[in-house]
Length: 309
Image (cartoon, rainbow, N blue to C red):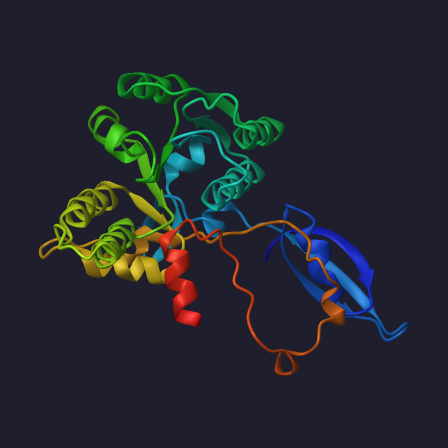
Protein backbone atom coordinates (compact mmCIF):
# COMPACT_ATOMS: atom_id res chain seq x y z
CA UNK A 1 0.00 0.00 0.00
CA UNK A 2 3.02 2.31 0.19
CA UNK A 3 3.28 4.79 -2.72
CA UNK A 4 5.75 4.10 -5.52
CA UNK A 5 9.09 5.95 -5.26
CA UNK A 6 11.02 4.68 -8.29
CA UNK A 7 11.59 1.70 -10.55
CA UNK A 8 14.90 0.21 -11.67
CA UNK A 9 15.96 -2.89 -13.58
CA UNK A 10 18.01 -5.46 -11.70
CA UNK A 11 19.25 -9.00 -12.18
CA UNK A 12 17.83 -10.31 -8.92
CA UNK A 13 15.70 -9.24 -5.92
CA UNK A 14 18.92 -9.07 -3.85
CA UNK A 15 20.08 -6.17 -6.04
CA UNK A 16 17.02 -4.15 -4.98
CA UNK A 17 18.16 -3.86 -1.36
CA UNK A 18 21.19 -1.58 -1.98
CA UNK A 19 19.03 0.68 -4.17
CA UNK A 20 16.52 1.07 -1.35
CA UNK A 21 19.14 1.54 1.35
CA UNK A 22 20.80 4.36 -0.59
CA UNK A 23 17.56 6.37 -0.72
CA UNK A 24 16.37 7.77 2.63
CA UNK A 25 12.83 8.04 1.25
CA UNK A 26 12.67 4.30 0.52
CA UNK A 27 10.80 2.19 3.07
CA UNK A 28 10.86 -1.10 1.15
CA UNK A 29 10.64 -2.68 -2.29
CA UNK A 30 8.93 -5.40 -4.28
CA UNK A 31 10.21 -7.39 -7.25
CA UNK A 32 8.62 -8.11 -10.63
CA UNK A 33 10.51 -10.77 -12.64
CA UNK A 34 10.90 -10.33 -16.38
CA UNK A 35 10.78 -13.43 -18.57
CA UNK A 36 12.07 -11.44 -21.55
CA UNK A 37 15.60 -10.86 -20.26
CA UNK A 38 15.90 -13.01 -17.14
CA UNK A 39 16.12 -10.21 -14.63
CA UNK A 40 13.33 -8.01 -13.35
CA UNK A 41 12.22 -4.66 -12.01
CA UNK A 42 12.71 -3.31 -8.49
CA UNK A 43 9.79 -1.16 -7.38
CA UNK A 44 11.01 1.06 -4.55
CA UNK A 45 8.28 2.16 -2.14
CA UNK A 46 8.03 5.38 -0.12
CA UNK A 47 7.48 5.43 3.63
CA UNK A 48 3.80 4.99 4.47
CA UNK A 49 1.95 7.90 6.11
CA UNK A 50 3.23 8.69 9.61
CA UNK A 51 -0.02 7.41 11.14
CA UNK A 52 1.09 3.92 10.03
CA UNK A 53 4.89 4.26 10.12
CA UNK A 54 5.00 5.84 13.59
CA UNK A 55 1.52 5.80 15.16
CA UNK A 56 1.68 9.16 16.89
CA UNK A 57 -1.01 9.74 19.52
CA UNK A 58 -3.88 7.81 18.05
CA UNK A 59 -7.59 7.88 18.68
CA UNK A 60 -9.02 4.39 18.97
CA UNK A 61 -12.52 4.36 17.53
CA UNK A 62 -14.57 1.26 16.83
CA UNK A 63 -11.56 -0.97 17.21
CA UNK A 64 -9.61 0.93 14.51
CA UNK A 65 -6.50 2.97 15.18
CA UNK A 66 -6.34 6.29 13.36
CA UNK A 67 -4.58 9.59 13.71
CA UNK A 68 -6.31 11.88 16.19
CA UNK A 69 -8.34 14.64 14.53
CA UNK A 70 -6.31 17.41 16.13
CA UNK A 71 -3.13 15.94 14.61
CA UNK A 72 -4.75 15.87 11.17
CA UNK A 73 -5.76 19.53 11.36
CA UNK A 74 -2.65 20.92 13.04
CA UNK A 75 0.44 19.63 11.26
CA UNK A 76 2.98 21.29 13.58
CA UNK A 77 5.10 19.22 15.96
CA UNK A 78 7.77 19.94 18.57
CA UNK A 79 10.63 17.47 18.98
CA UNK A 80 12.52 18.11 22.25
CA UNK A 81 15.93 16.54 22.98
CA UNK A 82 18.87 17.21 25.31
CA UNK A 83 20.97 18.50 22.42
CA UNK A 84 20.94 18.78 18.62
CA UNK A 85 21.47 15.32 17.07
CA UNK A 86 24.99 13.94 17.31
CA UNK A 87 25.84 11.75 14.30
CA UNK A 88 28.10 9.64 16.54
CA UNK A 89 25.19 8.53 18.73
CA UNK A 90 22.97 5.71 17.50
CA UNK A 91 20.02 7.05 19.47
CA UNK A 92 20.38 10.47 17.80
CA UNK A 93 20.51 8.91 14.34
CA UNK A 94 17.22 7.21 15.19
CA UNK A 95 15.94 10.66 16.13
CA UNK A 96 17.02 12.00 12.72
CA UNK A 97 15.23 9.11 11.01
CA UNK A 98 12.04 10.05 12.88
CA UNK A 99 12.45 13.71 11.89
CA UNK A 100 12.86 12.68 8.25
CA UNK A 101 9.74 10.48 8.42
CA UNK A 102 7.69 13.34 9.88
CA UNK A 103 8.88 15.82 7.24
CA UNK A 104 8.17 13.25 4.49
CA UNK A 105 4.64 13.00 5.90
CA UNK A 106 4.23 16.78 5.51
CA UNK A 107 4.45 17.72 9.18
CA UNK A 108 6.05 21.05 10.05
CA UNK A 109 8.68 20.20 12.65
CA UNK A 110 10.45 22.36 15.23
CA UNK A 111 13.46 20.89 17.04
CA UNK A 112 14.27 22.14 20.54
CA UNK A 113 17.65 21.27 22.05
CA UNK A 114 20.53 22.73 24.03
CA UNK A 115 23.24 24.26 21.88
CA UNK A 116 26.48 22.25 21.71
CA UNK A 117 29.01 24.58 20.10
CA UNK A 118 32.24 23.06 18.89
CA UNK A 119 30.95 19.51 18.55
CA UNK A 120 31.41 18.53 14.91
CA UNK A 121 28.97 15.62 15.05
CA UNK A 122 26.26 17.81 16.51
CA UNK A 123 26.97 20.53 13.96
CA UNK A 124 26.44 17.95 11.23
CA UNK A 125 23.21 16.90 12.93
CA UNK A 126 22.02 20.51 12.96
CA UNK A 127 22.91 20.85 9.28
CA UNK A 128 20.98 17.68 8.45
CA UNK A 129 17.87 19.00 10.22
CA UNK A 130 18.15 22.38 8.48
CA UNK A 131 18.56 20.67 5.10
CA UNK A 132 15.12 19.03 5.42
CA UNK A 133 13.42 22.22 6.57
CA UNK A 134 13.31 21.68 10.33
CA UNK A 135 13.35 24.82 12.48
CA UNK A 136 15.91 24.76 15.33
CA UNK A 137 15.43 26.36 18.74
CA UNK A 138 18.09 26.47 21.47
CA UNK A 139 17.51 25.40 25.07
CA UNK A 140 14.53 27.11 26.70
CA UNK A 141 12.72 27.04 30.02
CA UNK A 142 9.45 25.25 30.79
CA UNK A 143 7.45 28.45 30.42
CA UNK A 144 9.20 29.38 27.16
CA UNK A 145 8.53 25.92 25.70
CA UNK A 146 4.85 26.28 26.55
CA UNK A 147 4.81 29.70 24.92
CA UNK A 148 6.56 28.29 21.84
CA UNK A 149 3.98 25.49 21.55
CA UNK A 150 1.18 28.03 21.86
CA UNK A 151 2.72 30.46 19.36
CA UNK A 152 3.11 27.77 16.70
CA UNK A 153 -0.19 26.05 17.56
CA UNK A 154 1.43 22.59 17.70
CA UNK A 155 -0.60 19.42 18.13
CA UNK A 156 2.11 17.01 19.33
CA UNK A 157 5.22 17.37 21.50
CA UNK A 158 7.76 14.52 21.37
CA UNK A 159 10.03 14.39 24.43
CA UNK A 160 13.07 12.12 24.35
CA UNK A 161 13.82 10.24 27.56
CA UNK A 162 17.56 10.04 28.20
CA UNK A 163 19.01 9.78 31.71
CA UNK A 164 22.67 10.03 30.80
CA UNK A 165 22.98 13.77 30.13
CA UNK A 166 24.29 16.49 32.43
CA UNK A 167 20.82 17.82 33.25
CA UNK A 168 17.35 16.53 34.03
CA UNK A 169 15.56 14.44 31.42
CA UNK A 170 13.26 16.19 28.96
CA UNK A 171 10.03 14.73 30.47
CA UNK A 172 11.23 15.70 33.98
CA UNK A 173 11.81 19.23 32.77
CA UNK A 174 8.79 19.82 30.54
CA UNK A 175 6.04 17.19 30.82
CA UNK A 176 4.20 18.54 33.90
CA UNK A 177 4.09 22.12 32.59
CA UNK A 178 2.89 21.02 29.15
CA UNK A 179 0.25 18.71 30.59
CA UNK A 180 -1.18 21.27 32.99
CA UNK A 181 -0.88 24.39 30.80
CA UNK A 182 -1.84 22.88 27.43
CA UNK A 183 -4.01 19.83 28.19
CA UNK A 184 -5.15 19.56 24.55
CA UNK A 185 -1.61 18.71 23.41
CA UNK A 186 -0.68 15.12 22.65
CA UNK A 187 2.58 14.20 24.42
CA UNK A 188 4.82 11.43 23.11
CA UNK A 189 7.80 10.08 25.09
CA UNK A 190 10.52 8.55 22.90
CA UNK A 191 12.93 6.21 24.69
CA UNK A 192 15.76 3.97 23.50
CA UNK A 193 16.16 1.86 26.64
CA UNK A 194 14.47 0.48 29.74
CA UNK A 195 16.66 2.78 31.77
CA UNK A 196 16.11 1.43 35.27
CA UNK A 197 17.06 -2.10 34.15
CA UNK A 198 20.26 -0.72 32.65
CA UNK A 199 20.99 1.16 35.89
CA UNK A 200 20.35 -1.99 37.92
CA UNK A 201 22.95 -3.82 35.82
CA UNK A 202 25.42 -0.97 36.34
CA UNK A 203 24.99 -1.12 40.11
CA UNK A 204 25.33 -4.90 40.22
CA UNK A 205 28.48 -4.77 38.10
CA UNK A 206 30.00 -2.03 40.25
CA UNK A 207 29.31 -4.00 43.41
CA UNK A 208 30.90 -7.19 42.07
CA UNK A 209 33.92 -5.35 40.61
CA UNK A 210 34.73 -3.41 43.79
CA UNK A 211 33.96 -6.33 46.06
CA UNK A 212 31.83 -4.18 48.34
CA UNK A 213 28.15 -4.11 49.16
CA UNK A 214 26.60 -0.99 47.62
CA UNK A 215 23.06 0.29 48.08
CA UNK A 216 21.54 -2.54 46.11
CA UNK A 217 19.21 -1.11 43.50
CA UNK A 218 18.63 2.19 45.33
CA UNK A 219 19.39 4.48 42.38
CA UNK A 220 17.77 2.04 39.96
CA UNK A 221 14.54 2.16 42.00
CA UNK A 222 14.52 5.97 41.95
CA UNK A 223 15.08 5.92 38.20
CA UNK A 224 12.36 3.29 37.77
CA UNK A 225 9.79 5.45 39.58
CA UNK A 226 10.61 8.50 37.43
CA UNK A 227 10.84 6.59 34.16
CA UNK A 228 7.54 4.73 34.55
CA UNK A 229 5.79 7.90 35.70
CA UNK A 230 6.77 9.64 32.43
CA UNK A 231 5.40 6.76 30.36
CA UNK A 232 2.22 6.66 32.41
CA UNK A 233 1.44 10.37 31.95
CA UNK A 234 2.26 10.46 28.23
CA UNK A 235 -0.31 9.90 25.50
CA UNK A 236 2.02 7.63 23.56
CA UNK A 237 5.42 5.94 24.02
CA UNK A 238 7.94 5.06 21.30
CA UNK A 239 10.17 2.14 22.35
CA UNK A 240 13.08 0.68 20.43
CA UNK A 241 11.77 -2.91 20.54
CA UNK A 242 8.72 -4.97 21.44
CA UNK A 243 10.80 -6.55 24.22
CA UNK A 244 11.34 -3.13 25.82
CA UNK A 245 7.61 -2.45 25.65
CA UNK A 246 6.94 -5.73 27.46
CA UNK A 247 9.56 -4.94 30.11
CA UNK A 248 7.99 -1.54 30.76
CA UNK A 249 4.50 -2.97 31.09
CA UNK A 250 5.73 -5.68 33.48
CA UNK A 251 7.55 -3.09 35.61
CA UNK A 252 4.46 -1.01 36.40
CA UNK A 253 3.55 -0.97 40.07
CA UNK A 254 0.23 -2.56 41.18
CA UNK A 255 -2.76 -0.41 40.35
CA UNK A 256 -1.16 1.23 37.30
CA UNK A 257 -1.94 0.07 33.79
CA UNK A 258 -0.98 1.37 30.35
CA UNK A 259 -2.85 0.04 27.33
CA UNK A 260 -0.45 -1.67 24.88
CA UNK A 261 -1.91 0.46 22.08
CA UNK A 262 -0.23 3.45 23.66
CA UNK A 263 3.12 1.96 22.58
CA UNK A 264 4.77 1.82 19.18
CA UNK A 265 8.12 0.34 18.21
CA UNK A 266 10.51 2.63 16.33
CA UNK A 267 13.69 0.69 15.69
CA UNK A 268 17.09 1.89 14.51
CA UNK A 269 16.95 2.49 10.75
CA UNK A 270 20.05 3.62 8.88
CA UNK A 271 20.36 4.45 5.20
CA UNK A 272 23.93 3.35 4.44
CA UNK A 273 24.38 0.94 1.57
CA UNK A 274 26.01 -2.44 2.38
CA UNK A 275 29.75 -2.70 1.88
CA UNK A 276 29.48 -5.81 -0.29
CA UNK A 277 27.04 -6.93 -3.00
CA UNK A 278 24.29 -8.95 -1.35
CA UNK A 279 24.13 -11.25 -4.35
CA UNK A 280 27.75 -12.38 -3.75
CA UNK A 281 27.23 -13.33 -0.10
CA UNK A 282 27.35 -17.07 0.58
CA UNK A 283 24.15 -18.65 1.93
CA UNK A 284 23.68 -18.55 5.69
CA UNK A 285 24.33 -22.27 6.13
CA UNK A 286 27.84 -21.84 4.65
CA UNK A 287 28.85 -19.03 7.04
CA UNK A 288 30.42 -19.32 10.48
CA UNK A 289 31.12 -17.19 13.59
CA UNK A 290 29.72 -13.78 14.46
CA UNK A 291 30.72 -10.13 14.17
CA UNK A 292 29.71 -8.03 17.19
CA UNK A 293 29.24 -4.31 16.57
CA UNK A 294 29.43 -1.98 19.56
CA UNK A 295 31.57 0.75 21.10
CA UNK A 296 31.82 -1.14 24.43
CA UNK A 297 31.45 2.03 26.51
CA UNK A 298 27.83 1.03 27.08
CA UNK A 299 27.50 -1.72 29.71
CA UNK A 300 24.74 -3.36 27.71
CA UNK A 301 27.32 -3.96 24.95
CA UNK A 302 29.25 -6.05 27.45
CA UNK A 303 26.08 -7.92 28.44
CA UNK A 304 25.29 -8.68 24.80
CA UNK A 305 28.84 -9.77 24.00
CA UNK A 306 28.87 -12.01 27.07
CA UNK A 307 25.59 -13.61 26.02
CA UNK A 308 26.99 -14.54 22.60
CA UNK A 309 30.25 -15.77 24.13
